[in-house]
Image (spheres, rainbow, N blue to C red):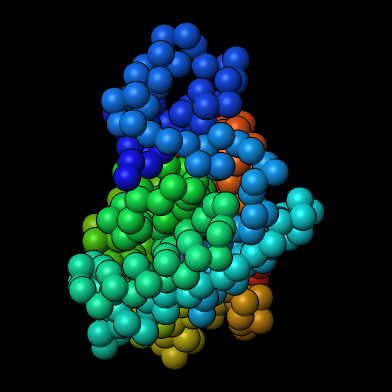
Amino acid sequence: MHTIRDVAKLAGVSIGTVSNVLNNQAKVSKQTAERVQEAIKQLNYTPNSFAKGLKSSQSRLIGILSEDISSFFSGYIIDGICEYCDTKDYSITLCNLGINRKAMHGTCFFYKDLEESDAFKKNVASTVSILSASQICGLIYIGTHPRDVTAILPDLDVPVIYTHAYTHTDTYSINYDDYQGARLAMDYLIKNGNSRIALLCGPIDSVPAHKRLLGYQSALMEHQIQLYPDYIRQGDWHYESGYAECAKLLQMKKPPTAIFSMNDNMAYGAMNAAQDFGCSIPGDLSICGFDNLEHSAYMRPALSTIQLPLRKMGSLAAETLLDVLDGNPPQETGLLLPCLLKERASVANRNFA
């Protein structure tokens, strides 16, 4: 049985465009509409209530499939989804894959190994069956961190919106802008008089880490500041690596005056390492994190960091899903929302030192 996704692929258009054709929306050109109709004919596709946009047939029940609700990020995203759906009189049903405890080997997460395992695929299939039996009219998939999850879900005949994750197919995704967030942190440190800025990186196979690295490098280049390769230290997102790498930085002949940590956990480790080495924060060393975890405002000193638009991601994912259901899908499929800078006491202004 063919799905609306198959029609979109054959016609070379988005799922939203197929929905618009089925709803006789004027915004679709005649040539595109003919291509979609030909694909429908070739596949002998029969639209369901979603594809026709028949609101009276919709269950008004939105499914949420979270990779791990224990994640700091997931709770805020889910809250944003629920808040928006409440205003539109849609109900929510939630399923949890519990991916973190299954992917954890020692101190590292092996998501790819897990995703390729038969046990995980069976778990996903069972969960999707439960959601389908609930007669959901659409699904929002929440990742544990932004990465390609194309192969995880089977083809569904309801629209799927991805947030804190993305796919390489023509689906809608809502994420934050890692590059822009890194530039915010770096511009902030540079504005406060720092030219020797170290970087605590995440794992090399992490897409967010690569984008934040690009933000770090471009800020140095734009401000004509020398890049010191030894200042770039690879961690693993955990506290211990932040501590260890900061300790190495502080023992250099020419230690940095500031550290940009790619997440708050490593920043916590760096703060404690600095204090153990007799460095004052921010007097001797300024530190800026990324994530704005709950404890960051209560550190001593309070940690300057980058705040992620998690609730906004959730509400926009829900808004996008309902727009698709209404036959009014957005033109842009991959949205990156801007991050915000939270200025606190861990960064000093060295311009007047």
